[in-house]
Amino acid sequence: MSSETNHLAAQLARQIESGGPISVQEFMRVANAAYYGRGDVFGAQGDFITAPEISQMFGELVGLWLADIWLRWGKPGRAYYVELGPGRGTLAADALRTTRTFGFEPSPVFVEQSAALRALQSEKIAGVEFAPSLDDLPEDGPLFIVANEFFDALPVQQLVCTHAGWRERVVIRDRGERFAAVPGSQPMDHLVPPDFRNTSSPSIYETCPDAGGIMYELSGRLAVQGGAMLVVDYGYSLPGLGDTLQAVKSHKFADPFENPGEHDLTAHVNFLELANIARIRGLRVSGPVQQGEWLVSLGIDARTAALARSVPDREEELRAARHRLVDSSEMGGLFKVLAVSSAESPPPAGFAPSKVVS
View 1 (tube, rainbow, N blue to C red):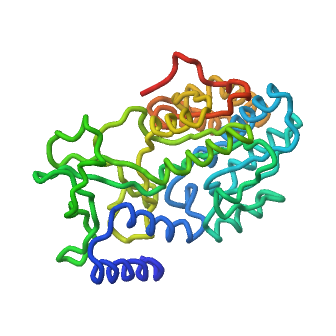
View 2 (cartoon, rainbow, N blue to C red):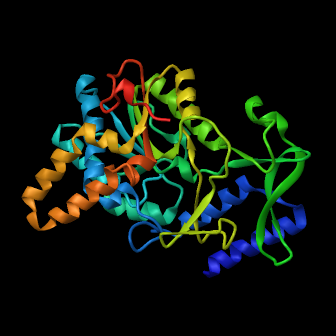
């Protein structure tokens, strides 16, 4: 355990000792801020690997998707490529290289809180600008927004059903001086949808207020400025019950409440909520569809074949990457893709009406 993690654990312990239990939501917020503040945690040598790090094909097809909208929209002039939580900048590099081949050169703007990651991203993407918050995004052109594995890292509020009713799940220090999650004392029944209120103990209902707020703000921007947003993540399209909070360290699952700041904490994304917020703001909603189906519809098989012809010694590697990105037993089935776009922009590619998944 690093000294930074020791410091965070001690800080949280003092906070709980002096002020009482903290919510799971606050624990996840603080832990992830410290975790991503450490810098490069991605790739085979890090804790987890994302689709852009598996193969350049993922970012290239995202770029193709963006360029296709821009071309069919009549090539609007000033435009921005906005990425939320852009990691190393790998996705942006591949996507923007592809958009340039079609004459589309949006100005890159990253929404990134980690100073260490901003340094990495500046090295990879020339001329990138950073928006400290959504309020700082440019207002003088359409936004082409990409959020790949961004929403899953936002802190979730967990409500747990007890014999006394619904309570918020909070974090304490147990007798072994470890962090643990238990039901709080304040009634929370009013926050649970009526369909779930009479379930059995200890069922858990999750919400993500931050995700809703971000989608509401960005949807409003798209409605006014124009553009489109692509969300790629793992999650669900119909609300339900269950604890989806998980931690990953060195590509293995870990205890979410052990060593705060040392693990990547994530939870499943509620795609239905994101889609409904966009609809409320007057946007077109496409999907969600499975990532594999989306990539196949955009031409990943042709791209795999083309790359294999140009670099024959990498054919096996390319086929393996394609399998991992597309196959229903791999990321292709686990991850979903949702698009929201302004009413005046053209319908986005890759979303057949009959292919919406639950």
